[in-house]
Length: 599
Image (cartoon, rainbow, N blue to C red; front, side, top):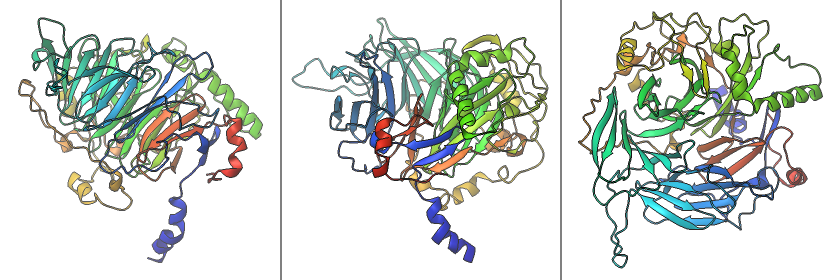
């Protein structure tokens, strides 16, 4: 009792202190207080009941050398600024464009990087009422409005109802490599493919079935003239919270409120593989630079690493104390060494030289990672770096190393900087490995593991069903035996900061057109199968760092070449300089800024 009281009075203060810098093996990451972006008045936003703050970047190839642009939403407002990063202080008094919306709020946005120039950019904005807007913040124009049309009689200004989907837009992205196609996800669980050159029509769309599988269906829009949407996907149950395209744009990873990750071949509209969260919904997803691994996070407070080739979970990471809201790979720190592993010893100068050398090579990480599948038998030393932020206001870094990726390769030395809490081997499954093409890599991608649990590249519903019927592993860990109702009873514990949560309601579509059979899966039956391995059956990672960096829940994590960008629900977008990347202006102003805590 006395110890807990002392922790609350003394140690708790240090634990709750917001960090302005932190140290990893690369060096010190520093918060640049003069590079903070927010609303011009810099007043913390009252985030109760508001949609998450989101950030989008684009480079317009400005001849001045400062071509980076940033867009972010705070409540009903949308801002567009020149992003100066680590070079200069942010000037919030001069936004390029600012918009305030009535009756709806921006929820997400995405730039088209193919068409961006210094004179024009195409920005898609999704809204809480279901609309999607195409705007040009440089020209200050609104090109088109999708899922809501205005009557041709401008005097009456009669707005037609949202005929495609009335639920909140959860994610919007341009289709990679396309100047006209974009994809929109809704909290109804539906996903729509649009073409900016087509109209939405003045009547509700009629659909015809294109393809149907287990817990998903795809329909085309039946119309004499070309109109939006081109395709309608119904995926899982509840909200479709986020999706992400593979690096080559051929595959689509979707995470839903039903707790499933589903990976589709986008062009063939076929299901490639699935994964189930430990419990609760999945909220975020991202791909590794080479497309071989997918990381997802959500309401189980875990980050889960899934192998695209083997269609199985290979590791989980436990460090957050509440829902994980964003996961992202760091393309600039992910490294591949064909030679012997680096030994981190010697002076600090030698240490920094090694790191900078490693990071320079990381720019070509995607091509180097493909060497894993070559005929060269030498073990390739690989470290994937990814990060996560959550509603517990914490930032975590994780290293996915070769001892996790290739657990049976004899390595003389390893670089395991993310601790492995539990690395018991997986049960061996009956099956034959089938070489699958990995996104962004045309080489066969079967991994040299004796205990892999492989699937074919086009996983069928039957194979998924057989996986669910496989024997449940014996032995029960502390996490594995925690019943779902027990988790709900602990919903309001202090160390589980649910008060940061917005809440994710699963709104069901009222569209009766879909003949989709939605079979509810009992979590108890999926636990211990390929869809959701038990905690003791796979490695459990500890974070490389885990630091509290905000007062409110974190909603953004973006890795850039010379910095990382985070944002919280109060509307503050923060720039963290990478080691050795602190600009002259920032270093001059360090004396007047908070010193922070080095940890």
